[in-house]
Amino acid sequence: MSSFKRQIHLGLFLQGAGHHASGWRHPDARSGSDNLGHLLEVTRLAEQAKFDLVFLADGLTSGKGHHPSTAARLEPLTRLGALSTVTRKIGLASTASTTYGDPFHLARAFASIDHLSNGRAAWNLVTTSYARTAANFGRNAHLDHADRYAVAEEFVDVVKGLWDSWEEDALPKNKETGVYYIPEKLHALNHNGHYFSVQGPLNIPRSPQGHPVVIQAGSSDRGQALAARTADVVFTAQQTLADAQAFYAGLKSQLAAHGRKADDIAIMPGFLPIIGRTKNEAQEKLDQLEHWTDAREVLPLLSERLGHDMSVFDLDGPLPDLPETEQLKSRQKLLIELARRENLTIRQLAQRVATSRGHHVLLGTAEEVADELQNWFENGAADGFNIMPAYFPGELINFTSQVIPILQERGLFRRDYEADTLRGHFGWSRVPSPYA
Image (tube, rainbow, N blue to C red; front, side, top):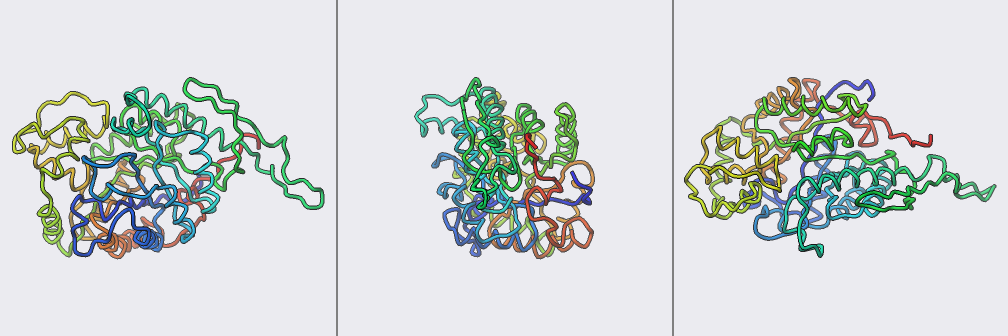
């Protein structure tokens, strides 16, 4: 990593009309993830505010249990291609599954986006948690948690190997000599592993970043181990400063075993800020969103994240003891701890999930929001934050126009981009070719 002054990194989590399950009902909310014009508008707002990246999550199913804003959405890599043509600096990140994907296809797609964007692509590696996905891919059963991560470990190695297919100077395109490319500088992968057999080489030249940025979002023990070895950025959900500090220290401590330094990876918890002229006004904004939220309608969101059907229990009773799930292990643990710590009923916990799906909710004035970001950043809890506006574009505009100027005044966030690539925004160099 270069000697860049350490500053907060910001990602914008693009999700439909907003991250609150009732955000779409706000009078000022724009339509959702199937509206390209809306996505272009908010991405431009994020770039004007100098965010490091925008992030498109993805899912491979729809229906009951889905956030209203994600029930219908366009395929994310297609959207990144569109966004690459109308932006210049901001990073472009998308989810793609290792459980229901193909390494060659995925490597080719993200390398293409890196070329289209001149070095701004990022792959959010996920293993896909929900068992119902299997039926969409001709499978009788969904892999269990351990097997999903075993597949992911091999999958990411294949993808990175394919990204290294071409040497840096393999394409001289010399008109005088008639040499377009040098075959000896093109390398087949010849991978034969437990889960994948991929010959290669990739039929796309080495991309502007060397490798697109790799993001990992699993916070279970297996997820952290995978991130420590392979990821550049980690998205996580943490409810308290103490929990975030423990996660941050624990993950960073695993890097040395892989020959990596602490600043080789950026940890970015999700934050849902709701900003008011006073804290009471911010609370009133949240109260209005919750007024539009029917707990029974959002109960499937809670059931999905806990891995158990919560409709069979008393909504106004305490959360029962639940066995560990094969789905979102870390998110289940986080929500159970939240319910126990704050003595929440199932109804109240469902409302929390409807608001932020387990991410940190921050209510207050712009100054108070900036204070909390600074506190986490300066006290070993985060390298940056994935910002999750309750509704778009209003809460994004509030954040960019009110909070970011405070962070800039404090020297905690850039006033302008200093690099052209996403790796450059994080202060990282281009990934060198192993054949250099």
